[in-house]
Image 1 (tube, protein in one colour):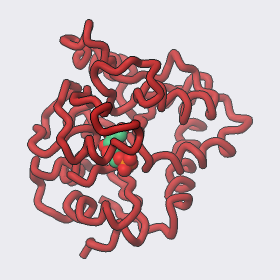
Image 2 (cartoon, protein in one colour; image 1 turned 180 degrees about the horizontal axis):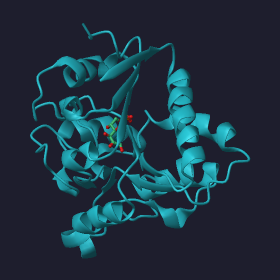
Image 3 (cartoon, rainbow, N blue to C red; image 1 turned 30 degrees about the horizontal axis):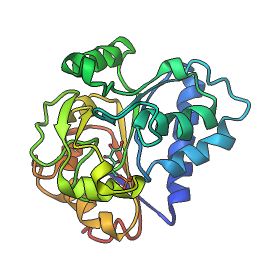
Image 4 (cartoon, rainbow, N blue to C red; image 1 turned 90 degrees about the vertical axis):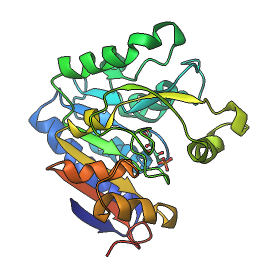
Length: 240
Ligand code: F6R
């Protein structure tokens, strides 16, 4: 992977946003892979001024993951988060921006449906990734198969604790999620893995330099031919 160390998350956001703007100019119906959580927010913030005056009506997007069994209108469902952080501020067409369907009624085929939708769109051109302290990308926790496609997973305790900050109590954090698989992520044409802060340093070092192992799912990026890792000094601090 190409590793870029930037002074601040805002610089990382600008770097990725510039690439997205270039892609949209080249192909107005570009397919973006969108992450949620804190890490990608500087990208979405940097995109806002850059996309002013640019026609984004054909841009398509697929989120990495969604909680299972959460009401899609719940403010912390990833559908809601993508709507308020990405679709609305950037003026994207909500019909073209997809999240995995975490509704229990259709969960048995939701993974397959999502894979088909991504394939029908021609695949993801640029995938934004954060990384969990467990080394997960998407919600592919340790032990996830490198060949996995979108499916239901159980969130590990550490991830539920990490995400409890978005809810009133940890008990409200759903137990299950539906996430793009490592195989799905590896099928995107260009991966941007972002991480900020000391808390991510061990996961970043494992992903970039450690052995390729499903014990650290982020290490799957080493199997991809086109990866850009964008980190601040603190997140880079355990790299050789
Ligand atoms: C989010 C996702 C997760 C997060 C990771 C880091 O869609 O799939 O892999 O990127 O948990 O979360 P933050 O950025 O909140 O530290």
